[in-house]
Amino acid sequence: MKRIDCTKKCKKTSMLRESKHCEGFAIYDNGKIKYSCDANLSLANKKEVSFYNCDFYDMEEYSQCYKCPLACKNNKSEIRKAKDASISEANKILDDISNNYPVNPGAIDFARANLDNDLSDGDKNAIKMVDMASNLLNRAMSGGKINAPLIKIISKAIKDQSKKR
Image (spheres, one colour):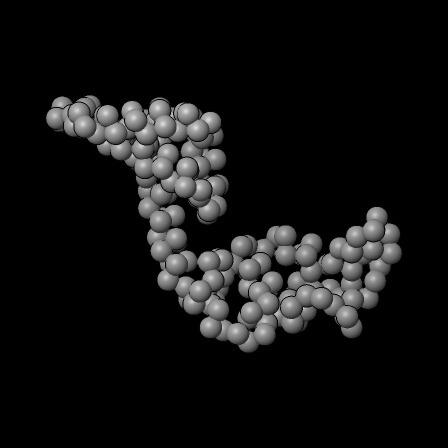
């Protein structure tokens, strides 16, 4: 292990170099350089990490803040706002599910931890089918009419997904 002064030739953004996270050294160990700021940032939240590692903001390309999908304190993206609103809505749905159905708390915690991840098209279809099935079950349990074509749609979608795997 060798300690290196990285203040003169640091590859990190200027915001990170000038922040409280930078201690001005790196450790060379087993062929890898580990910056002190990276270790300190591991304790920071996602918004701070995204901000300090943003090359666009560092280069004063602030227009990128309107397009960026990352969580950041300077993000002005409508896409990100919509994603945050979706995450908030999903948390409400998870609260409702955990209060009304006998679901393993570990499954709810896993779902909450992965809300910010991007979903594949298959995942989106699966969520749509689960939502449709949930609505159908809620109607059936409350004595409402059951939509037979909806059952066929759900059944077909499940069969299609099973064939793909």
